[in-house]
Amino acid sequence: IARMVSEKTGVKILSTTNPNYKGTQLDGFQNVVNRYVTDLMERPQEIRKGSVNLLGVLPGEHNWRNDLKEFHRILQALGLTVHCTLVGDKTSVREILEAPQAEVNCLVYPEAGLSTARLMEERFGTPYLETQFPPIGIDSSREWILKIAEFFGRRERAESFLEGEMEAMGRALSRLEEGQIFNLQFLFGKTYALEAMPFVIPAVVKFLREDLNMSPTTLAFQEYHEVSHARLARVLRENELSPEIQTDGDHKAFLESVKGEYARDGRYPDSRPSLVIGSTLDSLIFAFEGIRLPVLKLSYPVLDEAIITDNPFVGLRGVVTLVERVHNLIHQKYWYTGQAFGNHPDPYAVAKSLTARSRMAAKAQATPG
Image 1: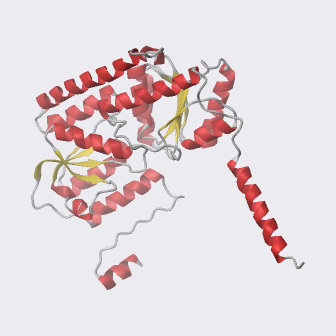
Image 2: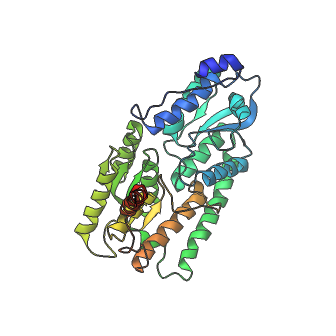
Image 3: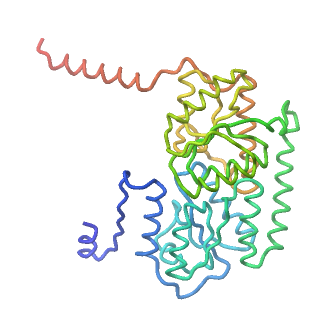
């Protein structure tokens, strides 16, 4: 149909085949973006110096718009410009057409952008920069920034920028010592369970271990990804961590593991895990079942939280954002002010009741007399 309409109207129409029984969400995302490369992008007539494309940006991830703004801010501080984002909500067709004019492709989430980067290198000769992890946490953020700076010969400028970022981060984190009963060190040794997309997990585990000395009890992939699994295995080995790992995307199995750990430990509020990193669904189910576990919303779907501030999760500013959220959620638990439970109606039961009432009303209207 797309081909017929395209021939009839003269309008280029791109189509992809992405059935949900064939591959993963990540496969579907890459199929679409790679079609931009093969069927839409134009061979460059010029290369725009000091420009980069951002690849592996996933608009479905929570707080992605703030992260994208932070990437722009960081690159601008290095004297660079973002030529095209593959993809973002403001990416234009013209930007996609001219994407090969960028001097280099920078991968945000390497697993999500690598196939597109390789395809653009093959078709247009565009080089790409890949790091092991996205810029989440201190070490990974430094590596990401310095790798880009070195490509453009701006290492000294990047070091100066990072020095200022570290000072600002230190000032922000020191505020936990001002008027707070529990300081930053109180988080050290706390535990968490995490369910997320595969490319997020290794970076988050690395950050929480290296920067906050927190350990995972359960790690669950929302869908399996071999490269992410291998990266996670390396992070766990290097940091001597041995959590339960679930790779089959079974949400129920993740919840059962968390509830089992919580019940075995039984020392509220010190019970394990101290925190769950997941989605609105996790928070909802724990509330229904009377399990008082704070949930840091990081994973799709997030339905009960709006973000209207400019606080990113990536870069050194992102360290401050995440530390603040982890600190506040864990301390809600220690003050017994966290998640309420026991008074929430089951939404499925409510829906069933309303449906039954609707049917009864319809039946009564249809019955003579």
